[in-house]
Image (cartoon, rainbow, N blue to C red; front, side):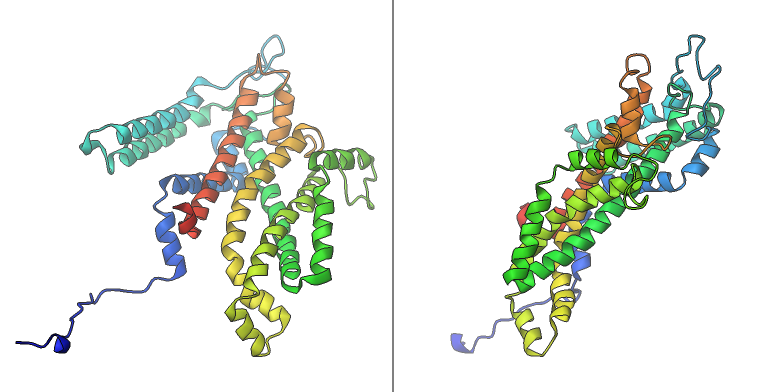
Length: 374
């Protein structure tokens, strides 16, 4: 008989267990969200299209975004703009049809259609769309038609993506830098510093952003602009207004996080070792704020894109002849019944861009905070 007290429990530990870094764990969770991955691919495609817009326009044989054509075939005999070529729409139709078939195959109850079959269907449709684009597009000089003065809508949509993405990234970057810095300072030092920064944030939040932009555009519409021609209607005013207001939201979020982090043991340990406040804030606390900062940045980028489109639509944003999706929608309000393409294509570009960034932001939030996602 074996004494139970002398029994030794044997635990078999597999030899191939390896520790994963936080980045590996994040990517493992994020890649399971197929919708977010597709949205990230759409964003990458939009960025590349905006960067290489001149090359793309040259390859398809289109004219520049500000080149006007006032004669046929871009304008009809009655002076109205012509629409997109039917051949030019076939690549988009094939991609949409392939996506619909892939979704249908994924939802059908037959097991042999699941797995890689939907992805294969969509990949084949994309390849076929590229082949059709190579065949048709170089011979169709105005893929999306022209506007009321004969400018190429395809070129203006591409250059509008440049403006929207540039404004969104720059304004978001400025908002993040200011908001994170002031939020950490307010949350760490508390007291009268926290009180002053918090009341300043409340004051800025009282400004309606659209009315502020319209007021600046009206006040600085002269030749000299404002502040020695530093502020005038256009790109600078749009970035300034968006960054001027949006940093307040991230500052509040960061302040709340820092109020909790400053009481943690690792901060007390760093303080006991003689670390300065600056080192504690930027070396100890800031790395623990990376996740909420990334999530909030991806969620505020589409908001800034909509802000730029709204300001341009109201005439307080990007000024003509620079292409902007919001300005194109404003110009199309009187033409949508006869020139539907002038509203549909910039509107679709705006919708797809904002939706893609929102989906990526949701995917990042679920991957960085799996407990809250469940």
